[in-house]
Length: 340
Image (cartoon, rainbow, N blue to C red; front, side):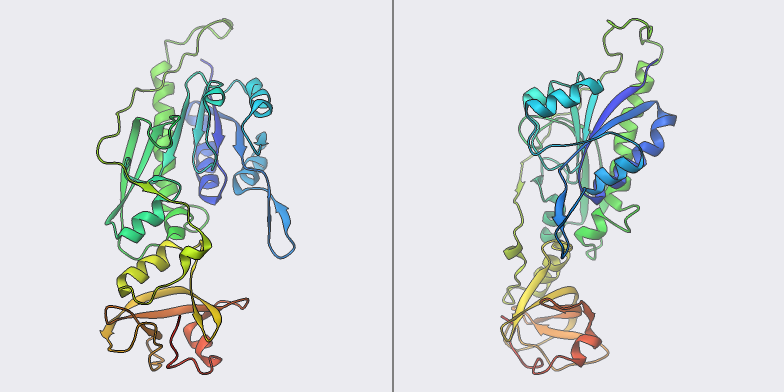
């Protein structure tokens, strides 16, 4: 029986980790990643060099053909059609698939989404779960539909949250694995493997080129419950409002790591708060006041509910990130100032 042919679509590091795990399992489970669709290279770093996406780099290292288009129009469809892919598998690709594009795939497409759909549809589900203070993070494998994140659910799982996770730790982990990618690839691999097993014994002879695709995508279950939607995150969203409760500021710092990072302003200079915890004490100081320095604790800052944020890693604008002790060694007139 011929292999199930899959076109993989994705762009950032988390998606690249899923791709690598699928490639490692594909031979044993009877499917084939026949190509990769990703975003065009983007300019990064001080010298604005054009750097391929992490998915493109992983695909090239594996010897897979890579396709990168600004828009999925006629040029893209004509380039991808000769691959003869049966199914499109997407995770964090970043572009919308139209009906003409999805028609390239006899089985349609599936998408991995890190939320308990229909909750947190859209592009920022993991930051949304952290900002809300959820006790768990859902991971769903859904059929691709023309309306974003509305497809039937093929498989789902959930990950417990301790209240210390960041978007980076959940999505990117150590660069080799993460909670979301470990869970997500297992859902995808399980689906593809089950499709191959179901088709075994019922597939036509490979010599019969006119025979229909022997594989079938399960029906899935319609999404149930009230839908919610997540917005795009802008750099300005990272500004800290010290009038908020300490717990809300702590969630924001974790949710916006690694993008856009949370920042404030001290004496007219932007200051990033990279890592922090909610302190154990309370204060009557005005929100944003930098409290007297206690070297064994960290940089303590008053919040709107009388609780304290304790910053342990900070970074002045255009400077290097520092632990709080190194930061305080050079922070003149910082104690007692009010962060804006």
